[in-house]
Image 1 (cartoon, rainbow, N blue to C red):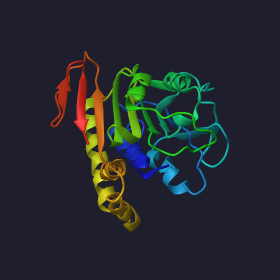
Image 2: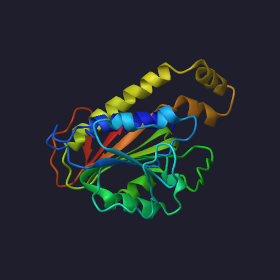
Image 3: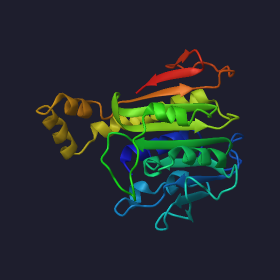
Image 4: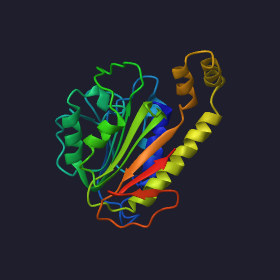
Length: 260
């Protein structure tokens, strides 16, 4: 797991109260947090283990193979779980390994409880990595179409806008129980703060790579310059009337665009 992906999950879990104890908040519904693609690859045990992020909730790790971090062996395109079993779903850097990606998203949507939240990320500008196979690179537009059934969503990317290294989605299933616009603002502020800190505290190897990019092609210079730039589009229910949080511009169709 990449450090930006873990930071995305952390920021989203806090902003959308996914780690809230049952009964702690009136909008904190019953149900476990399910992670699909939870196998802990050797050498990534610390950064890839998301259980501490959801320490107040039952956390169930699922993967196509047994091993560290896996509580249930599941086929993401044909889950054995009942409808509405999950309070929240985390599926990060996993969909590129699923051949029938559309069916996988339909299955996660079926399992997600009403009012639940799904967190998704996928690499785009990234090497082929077979765990066990690597099939797809998903664009922000692809994630927007895949999660079109959501009552509210955040679709974003990080890196060069025309060729990002990571794409993100946060999707809420109706009915939306939270002030989604306010939670979106909190998430964006928190994630951007992490990006700024991470860039400022990069190792000497990373800083040297940025300097060397000056002597390479224009594309590599842009990759290094924009590696920590992120942008997000927030879509809200059209019928929902929400106060406009500071720094967000409301567009027709219930869409809010926020910059990283």
